[in-house]
Length: 393
Image (tube, rainbow, N blue to C red; front, top):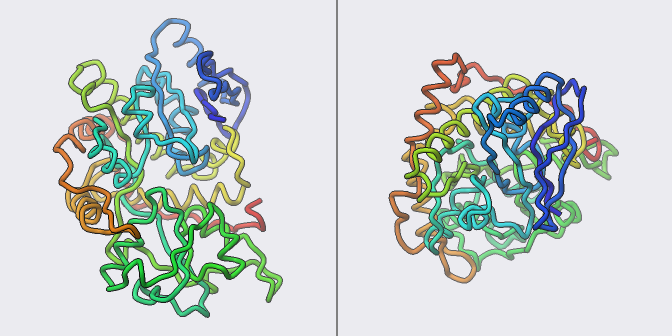
């Protein structure tokens, strides 16, 4: 089931507001009643009644979790309302391809990884990266210390897990740079959990810093009776290995960007979204609560861990959150062109069109935020310390 959200939760939950965004024509959509602070709830209701808000829909890449905390915070703290937007957030899932939902016109914006979208663009999707929210990759390959896997070269001859679905390209690029072909490993189709890794069926498992890595650290080590610790693991970080690719970005409909109203809306949406991410940076505990109370099924400590780790992907920002770095874009495109998977195919066969990304809209949003006194660089950002509990509770 897809869950839709229009009004997020604040830490001081004082009112329940029906989202009112379910579709009678789509049996997969469902309305959600979400707790909100009284001030934002009242302001939203007043603005809706006055007809002052433009309805906007955002398709997430995955289910409700702190990976998307900035957008939830922007709803819960009325940052979107301040920009005249009434935002509906639509959860993703295994069977949902965000860029396809966007390209078909079913939503106004979508969150997706750049390499996944590059393939869709080559196949005809007319969409544009208008804000590169995550500056750094969160994808890693983890292994227990006794496997002696400390670099991509060490993956040769090992059982290597990967989820597939477009998540495998940094792994393959890192391996190939180290002279390890896909045929040199035992490639294991990894489920979206760490069970096979913990059972010893996978030597090196794919893990996001903000999710699967934490799942291991939330598990009791049967040899010690205590939770596993980072000292039990080796981690291959694709940022360090040189094969990182750009991940979560805000995508818009290319052809609609020529429309003045959609262009203005896009700037407003980016502005409010970045302000939401600044809120998450400065208030990680409250942001984790917002996501939890907005329907996420993750445990309390896991949600806070995710919030903290996602913050590290944005902050500190080199040039301002959302600005697309040309060198990082080029690296992502080069890997998409030249890395082969187990079938010998690459993500794309030619350079993407110039319309694949644009800094025009995010630059305007950043300028407005700077004028408003919002810190979009976070140079003094320091992550918090999160203590994980068994099972992420």
